[in-house]
Image (cartoon, rainbow, N blue to C red; front, side):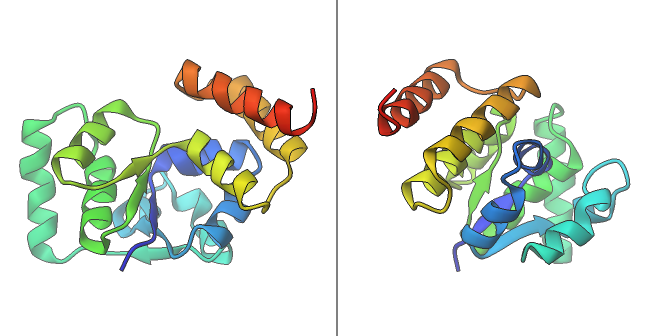
Length: 167
């Protein structure tokens, strides 16, 4: 199947950076969980926008819903919505887009590949979907929004984009 599952933080981070539409259109198929997309304090405010971007709302069967509770007992730092995103990615054999360390740990245990917002920005720039100046603007917006980004990866991407511009 493949594709990309966007967790709440990835949606908010990419939206703040102005990359949500282009990411959802180019990292396809794009998915969000059904529970999180209906929750008013999570992605419900973005659901219509996500669907316009081409993201598909993806539910889980009953057995997978039961797994959410058992996983949360083992990993109390994760929300229902975090676990849902990981299980949707597992079910779809998709990449989970998240910047959250605990969620990445769960994804690793489930053998689900993960990438963060920096990888999305790099991928879009490498595919020439966005140009280096636009990618630099996105990085700056993420930094100003206090997105949790790995400093070394951020610095490497920043240097690479500046190099592309001859700076």
